[in-house]
Amino acid sequence: MKFSKDKLNSVTVHTVFEGDQTGDLQELNERKLFKGKANDRYAMLNASGEGKIYYGLGKEDRIDSYLTTTYFHHLGKYLEKMNVSEVHLIIPTKIQEDSEMKAKVFEGLYQAEYKFTEFKKKSEDTYELTVSVENPAEMEASFITVEHVVKGAFVARDFVNQPSNKLYPETYAAQITELFEGTNVSVEVYDEAQIEELGMEAFLTVAKGSYRAPRLIVMKYMPLEQEEHITIVGKGMTYDSGGYAIKSTAGMVNMKSDMAGSAAVVGALYALEKVGIQQNVVGVIAAAENMIDGKAMKNGDIIGSMKGTTIEINNTDAEGRVTLADAIYYAATKLKSTEIIDLATLTGAAIAALGPNTTAMISNNDEMANAVLEASDKGCEPTHRLPAFPSHYKMIKGQFGELNNAPKGGGGAITAGIFLEHFAEDLPWVHLDIAGPSFGSKPFDYLPAGASGTGVKTLYRWIAAK
Image (tube, rainbow, N blue to C red; front, side):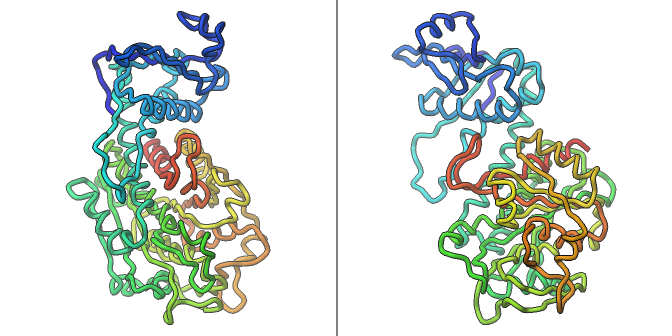
């Protein structure tokens, strides 16, 4: 998508609320051709494809940032279907006067252009929308920021959508290094021997079942002259078979997406660096595969960790929290972290509790949690904080080891979260379980089928607001 400072005259798109009777709208309404309901559309184009398009935004009193993103996303899809690539966009005053919704106009249109076609024959026909608006000088800055943040989400989607025979720890680290080459983000990649030197026994135990060696990937964006920084940690399981708690075929087919938390970390760093946000941020990814062979961890094993805490492996398919344990502890003890936020496709329990389109949160710090919730709301990535009671902390205690990686009794999204809290060393910490919204079998609102890039906008908003 491109932004034009000059007015484009061939097609004008009027986005209007239900009940608007100005211009042609009264006659169109009377003839029952267009009423302005959400996603209503009516094209008045000549044989050369020039003219007007009316697009409905529903009731004015219901519009918000999320609906603005969704409706303009659908508009973008419609314009592509109509092969209209240049438009002058008329936006209602209510949206123009709201800085959040104004930016969401561009975000919705931009998100409509995402496609993952790496493994398909390249089409000679490429579509890109160019938009002009009223008051372009006021709108251009919003567009530029949106462009960088949405591209960050696209970066995350592209990583997640790659199959595991193409994206595995070694190639993932190489692609991240290439992505940030020549930027202000430095990338350090630790191989298996270096991971062992760090004492990351939990991480290495999960990785043992695969012939693909693990990688610890540390990305540093440090524009400020100080060592302290925010740390964002992402679950980096490039494939999860479930190990000896093996998944079903249906449960396994999309497990390339089990690294979506780490992809969100990469996408957020991309956006932060492109916009030039003045906050020090470090991203940490423990990348591995959870597979089966004679060396793989087994249900019932007791293993160590970088912290020294022993962990009962009561379910090898609860491997993500085991790798994150070492990654979070590394962030808390080996880096100058002031706050830690982790993102992970961690539990089916989060989906059971909140449905497939909402992120679950656990946190040990109210102020930090509230700031992240506000960022998720502005980023249009619905998030809900779950409670954690003393009874939940009792549940993760092991019988023979110190912690149990998969306690029975329900509340799985909560117990998985507070398992991770044990390794945050009392630093302000937030855990985001993105198991539901990170990957979808079909499009939802403004999100495509496949990877969603969930988490990128929340991270960006939270850090940029500091």
